[in-house]
Image 1 (cartoon, rainbow, N blue to C red):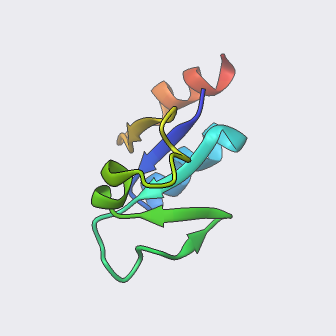
Image 2: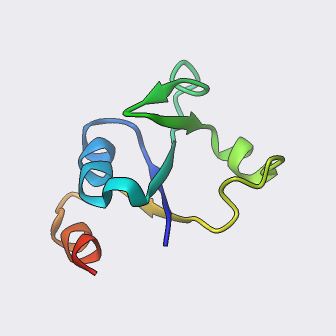
Length: 78
């Protein structure tokens, strides 16, 4: 299972760390961040994700950065 991390800030990067290679991309609402690469992953706008022209992320689930990483750690262990 692959995930797209909502938010490329501190919490989003923490989630990406726990997901490891199952993280496929970031979604971020900050236009200056969109189109860049962070930690080897593309940063998309939500609109780009929805349009999905290239189909790269069709099978990925969006995960929103929680305040606590307990849930993410449990996913990472599966």
